[in-house]
Image 1 (tube, rainbow, N blue to C red):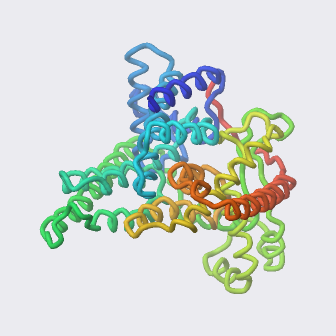
Image 2: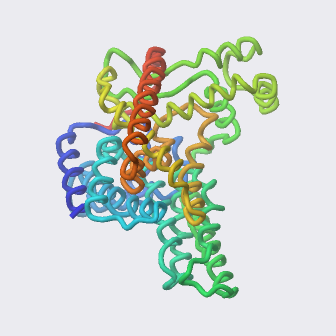
Length: 441
């Protein structure tokens, strides 16, 4: 029931937005996928340094549209609606239910899907490595945290899913040790001292994960045969990102508002003042310069990165590509912060059992790893989705006595008010920056 409702809702939403074209990274990703699916079409892009998974999946969809004679974008959005339904009504509720120690009922699954739809529905209209990476991570966590039956096979499958997550978005590599930790944890259904089973599970996970990187090497080799020789310098890109992370609080992608041309940039005055004092206002800086800034201004850098985390957990819009910049909903933001507070209260009151700790860390740390860089809310999706949907499975309001509930409600009101004030302050620093911005007609 929940899957069908989620699929139908997303499909109707996609149909209502069928006129929206692909922009920016989504455009580049779709063009690379088209080049993989159609040998007669050649396209090179800066996004190709990413792993092969999203490109190959989208290439399969594009090829299918060619065979069926259907519109490629509409075909993609049909399959993306299926992804949304599987993600929001199946994988996410299963993972959060196990973390909270409850069985996801159909009603909880439907409510979880509704929350994801409200806050992230626009993410599924475009080719995106963010949604795919998180979906694969959830599949991996669910595979290693299930029953003991077919433990080695499920762990091998978890390795493939984990590889898919990493090769969709590289920051998910920080989840690897926690998926491995979860795979090695014994539950009551396992024989306490089955050393060979433990070894088999560990090897299965590592071999499957390694196989995904072998496949990625084949993809890279295939693309290099038509290469023009322009490879991105990963360290140079990273140093630029670290520098921009001190200058910029957050970034939004303007896809239709003529009042704000190009990319929407929210400046970081504290970081700009630090760079001005250090004489590093333009371009990028070297690693030793970055480490020197951090060592001399640890408090300022800490405040800047705390703002990054706050901005990452403030979606502001239910899409990556914003059509009308000033159409921010106060109710949307207030609900986001209320659910976030409820999740933090649930974690504080109920704690997380030891078996849930690696799953929680696997979802949180990929987002936290993005804190030094300019903020786009999609980078924080793994943590944001958890904080928004976890109260469905661990409701902190359910068992409170009257006075405890009153105190919790008062704390929630203060938390939401403070967050709304901080969010308004961030959005007051908006500037439009004109950048090359491709669209797919």
